[in-house]
Length: 118
Length: 112
Image (tube, rainbow over all chains, first blue to last red; front, side, top):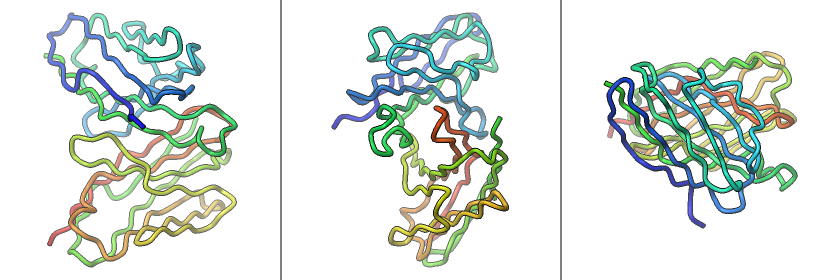
């Protein structure tokens, strides 16, 4: 099966500009997560979709970040306006719906989108 | 919320030696503990996991141990090979909740 696809792989923008990251999860995976890794620190949770609904967005840093998952398929994460501290690698991961053996716990990650804000 | 600490941050071993990475967690509700390996240019990939009703799990050269009382778990890699070089992340999760909480990662280098 196709894996989790993220685009772009690398984006360099100036402070104040807007960037939109896209994630295509594994087909049929209800759960979609966004995570971020900054400067060699932990992979930090941002938010969790179940199909098209935001299940948990407690990790979103502030209202400059907007995530959507229209139709419960692909997801976008928009940063507007970008600040220097937003630089990092943004990972998307997906997993099966709850109740499918242990599939809901096993995350499949994309390769990440590296964001550099200058 | 859950807090996961991972040590060491970097680890260098000679090919054929063993490598051990340790993690502690804070939330006693966590009951699922996966380990992910991230190679250069790729996303983290699950290599082994353990649930709280099990103390140890093995898969060829990789093993994970869990001490629920002390809230710590460890990854053991035996007979290391250069292709084991990567960043390893531990994580903790409550299977009744959505998100996983990750450690800071350990950069393992296996010298030939």
